[in-house]
Length: 223
Image (cartoon, rainbow, N blue to C red):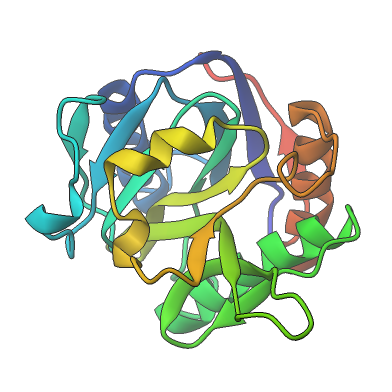
């Protein structure tokens, strides 16, 4: 397959503009008029609710702007210090298996975390990638470090993943992240785990891991 276009935006990107761009690009990919694309960016602080979002999980609607999202999943937070990767891939060429695609997205994150010496883990009943922070003899505890929420239209994906590099973790307090409210679950980031990672370092890890899972990527600039 041809290399996937790989673009990084340095400025904070408005959420609605990003969604419009993704939908347009996905249609162009389906029509054979554009290459597959992974778009790395940061958003200003905001909450998005996926197709399974429950009103009760929006704890403070006045904290940040709230957007409905066509992706799967529940409420999540986006903001500075979090690397969002929007993934526009042609699944018609990649097996037409959404479950396998989500598994591959999880593996991508797990492999990227391994570059920092971290063990990211899947959970059968909870989408995303988790870090086990249980202490010997203590209560079990796991923190989510990366969220996954995708939409597939005519076998082209959009939306994608969000990896916590160094966001303000208190910003998650306005929602029940991904509908998981039990005390033994929380959120974390690379920096919260003691990894002094920059966004550039996270991007390099994501690029290397992506190519190991999905194939070659080539850097492009978006017009």
